[in-house]
Image 1: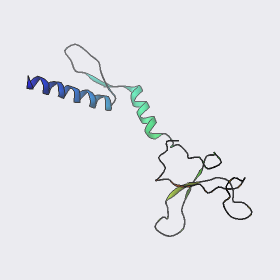
Image 2: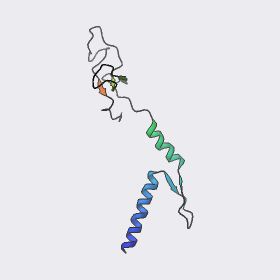
Image 3: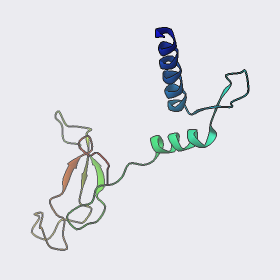
Image 4: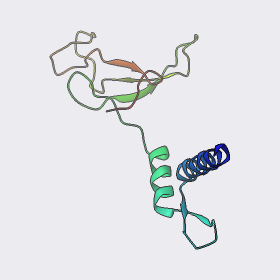
Amino acid sequence: MIQNKSILVSEHIFQIRARANNLVDLNIEGSDVLVHDPVASKESWSRLLRKPATPLCEHSEPCKSMLTRKKGENQGRSFWMCQRPLGPSGNKEKGTQWRCSTFIWSSDWKGDG
């Protein structure tokens, strides 16, 4: 009985690994033939390689991605900010046609939309 349970657990683990690797069982009698599922593989790679979702600023517009150039520990680090230009005051102005204060480090953005 214990041996039967271990076989069932082994088969279950095998099935989970096969699904994770986009493998399909052909169910050929007396054979355990597995092949890659091209549709599932394409979907998996598409999810991995697609462009990440862009955050929205306070104007509900897509932010632009920038890189820090200032020398220091954050040099070369990317971030998201409002794409609108600075206003005549030179400050970020909420609720106007000028740049809002949206600022998000790319490493902090989860990309959930």
